Length: 261
Image 1: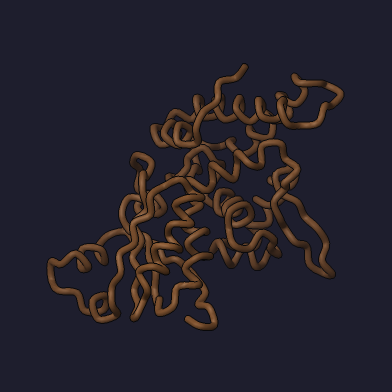
Image 2: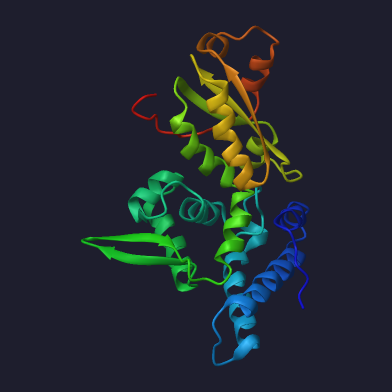
């Protein structure tokens, strides 16, 4: 039987640049899951393993030239962002134009990546009037494993976008530290936690702890919130902690304020 591997093992190998080992490890794990959970096909167990290996290969091809530093085993940053939006984001179904705007890529680029994922059976496309909606394919035998992997890499950004909308008094939110550095392209070991800066007035520490705790539970990483007032953020003292943050990597969390926020 194929040995099981934790997502952290996969991410660690990827960040070390051992892409061949990553491919073999993930393909083996997902194929093993397909044999145990998927419906029997004409080829039997070997056929399901072959199909899974082929699908994983489509995701991982061209790793050497365009892999995202945060999770280098995927084809490109665009593909990783699309899968994150579909499988771990607050919205699971998107039009091509809305998805392109959400991930910050041209419509043509987004369309090409979606077409590749659709051809591999990793996403679904359904007609909605004149538009077509792109969504996750929950019929994949290894959809759960993919969600788990995405949760522990790009997942925190998508999940924080969702939960922070309910924090009253929050005006801005940023991820900083090692996770932000990897997201912006700085190579290094996989982040072991996520540092979150919350700027606002009158925020409840209990509400913040509840929101970030939900992300930590699902993503499997520690989430460290830091609360600042508007004045502390806008006018940091020279050489202060906040001044250092502003000089380092920052990733904005595009949460939408709730009606009461």
